[in-house]
Length: 305
Image 1: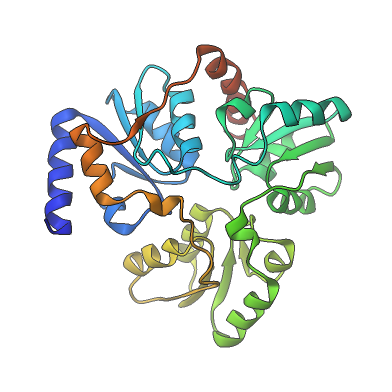
Image 2: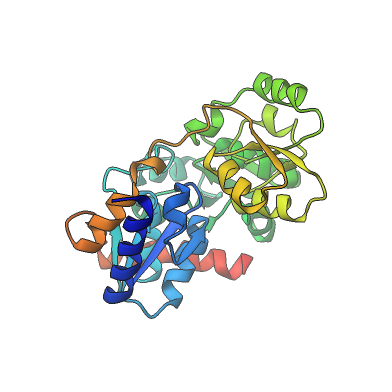
């Protein structure tokens, strides 16, 4: 089968079975083309909760499928590639953070959305990379324990100097591996290009950027900018997606190492097999986990909209 033939069969099956397909922005372009919604993880979870379809297929990683289940507990949620995890989400568990909370009982625990459902049960409020600064600024408590990404936490702390942040050693190993030297080299090679980076990068890289923001923020910045050249400092698939969206502009990779193997675990054929019922994993969470984990997401909505 050709890519187009596989895509056509996927489109036929999802319509026949009334399945909503979600694809995170880091998926390959052939998967984005057959998805009902694309974007960041929290946006996808909200979209899934709004549609009538009672079955949702997540083309992404496990914590994203769990977040969909938290917001749509009555729907059947399928993770397209069961082995697609997230090293950052798996770095810290509930027991670890419960111990840390005992040492810092007067701190509000802020959890990046990139965490497991179980870990969210012992956190006070959730944030996304795009909402973290706004939500942390709305927290009445000036003492914040930010988990798990210390680079995103440091970026938020730099924007809110009146608050005291406690950070743990965690984060995205893909973004964190990019060194300032690579950013300097990219700027030297492309002097007319704007450097756009994700806040999961180390502070030394963020300090060299023309813009620091979430994946959707980076894409929106390109859309709104008058510039014609950009160095993309997040998962390399975003540079390709931007090439399709803005073929008259030029996009360069900040680092060839910005490649998430977990996001690439899902293939177009995997999506087809999920719809045929021969692949994927249904995400099931205990009712108490859903109840407790939803609290920090509901608090995020209250503070951040």
